[in-house]
Length: 161
Image (cartoon, rainbow, N blue to C red):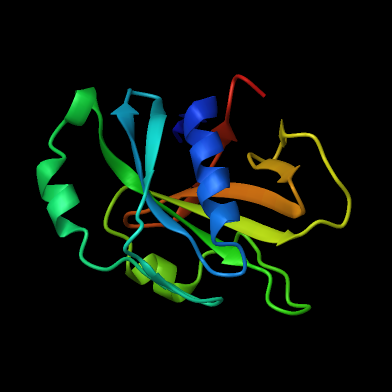
């Protein structure tokens, strides 16, 4: 099983793009490199043209970005990220939906649970492989899955936390 290591800059962009559209889902691409034992997430690209509401996001036509990204700055598309946001009293979670799995086009899917803050927390990596913390009035939990024959969660770390 591979490890997923994310830079603080990529994590910050992911969190801010989620906060920007909070109460609707965010969507973006995850870029980086792959080693024998780990995925190195170096940057993320929020997709601004995505059509979104509280329950789902439709990426729109970003196929041109994919076609043009053949090793941009030594990186390739590793996967995508999107949020599951709180709606009313129903809190967002990090579990993949059937739609998430069916629409997977790359190796990794990052799911960001974004909910109203109950208690402010420092940003940490947990022993279960999540990254959690709060920003403004939003609580975040971020989990990553590897797709393929079998969808499995992978440990996510950010060395700068």
